[in-house]
Length: 271
Image (cartoon, rainbow, N blue to C red; front, side, top):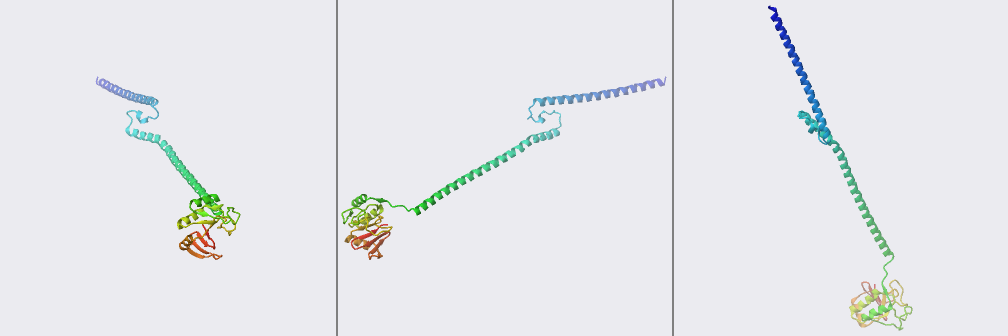
């Protein structure tokens, strides 16, 4: 009688302990199953969202709400760095290449402009040199006029011309011809009359019979005028005596004009 209650009590305790252990095992298994189901659900949801969200959306935007903040921030930073890094690496070379190309283009443009300027300057210098060389080798020829035009200008200015032979043939020494006389010579003799206020009569021009030379009658640089008291006084007073010519004629000079007093006329060189 005394041992049966004890055995029954031990049996109840053992059964209770086994029951508690079984309940604990069942609860643990249920907890693990629930956790596994939650993980699978979260993974499925994430996969679904990723499939429906464009690639450009950061992964951090579709993470489960239960993910840790520290891990999310680190992951997001890595994703952004990975996404932006290739862009920066690709953009920098393009910008540098564009800069080098633009600099090279500007340099080439400047070089072409300088070359063009130098070429133009060289061409102008060459043209100027050729012009100067041509001018030095071929002096400017004086303007010459005919006898009729020359006598018309003299008559209009109040001057006269006279021929001892009464002719105008340039090839006859007794004629007085102004054929091919320099226009400047006619202008200068008219100016002489106007300055002096004296009568001026031309007696010798470009006809033959005068001394030859570069600045001679025949080449239109000299004229002979008839002497008179008025023009004699003007030349000798207003001009400087500048020696005696080889034939004995006194020379009076005024700048480029030389007056030689011959026996029956003034031989005047206009230059």
